[in-house]
Length: 296
Image (cartoon, rainbow, N blue to C red; front, top):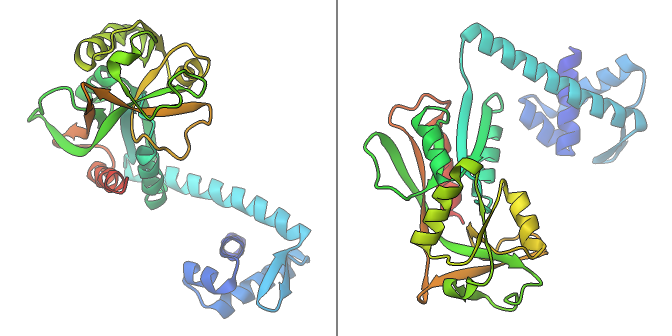
């Protein structure tokens, strides 16, 4: 009974009223109120101070809420582990995503999916284009979110998500910081910072030099944070995919639209998976991705 009362008490605190908590717990408002009162009687302490239609937590109530939150979480993890062991059910979903993708759609999709399926085990791995392609090809990820550099293969599901303009991030103290757009040829005097593993440096250099058209020096970072530190410290500029206006971008970095011969450079992004996916709810996650990108 105590676990159920913990759940009711947590629901009341989380919803900040008895009515919504009762709705969430599928019991009547009077029943949940009685359960909280019975819990207080059993503990011998007051957990809530009632004020007409509102309430506040007592010191004991704050402690009980914190401990209940931890205990209920531990119980849920235990139950999930037992169900997976008994049912031999794999609820893991492995997702590969671009290391230099700097918008929030992937994060939002993961958040929505995890809320919908709290028992799902999400494994995420970042990489550049070739790395993500290899992870999907060898079955090490169920979904690869990647820019399209190849013709679509009939061996995979190829779901178009969006076409993003290629932008460039520069320091707020860069000489071009007063601009909103810049031609790629005007960046020739500033090193281009790319994110890649040692083994992928040549591949990324070839793509950004030969296909995109960067002609200055190139330097490499291993992750987005390292690359942004390089940008902030004035070591160079970094091409990124995503919108020019991003709410959570660092105040030390500015993003400019990147042009080539006066035209925006668009990059098509897709979700790729095997035609017969084995990961947990692969197609549903891809649908959530599509929704997030459509709402961009």
